[in-house]
Image (cartoon, rainbow, N blue to C red; front, side):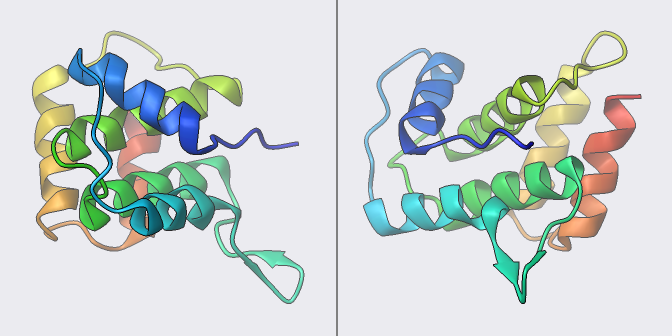
Length: 126
């Protein structure tokens, strides 16, 4: 069974990643981003794999920008925490420069397809 992050877990993940308390700019956008990985239609998950769910969460947080500041760091941290809670850890040291560029590409729309984002996340987890 998949463990999902709730609103407070996302805020906490972002606060830890940014080393300060986040300020929510738009509660509706935050709730939407948190709910997206759980989406389903006709009894089927919209995002079938854990990687797809992590990608949906990251994409929504990075592009919806629900916080005043720290959206990209929160998007990355929340995806990592989500995967950790579901038993997935990186296969080796995390390439911070690659991760920063990756989430920036998501936030700026250069990576907008959740399947491509999921594949990128999965690649760094080995």
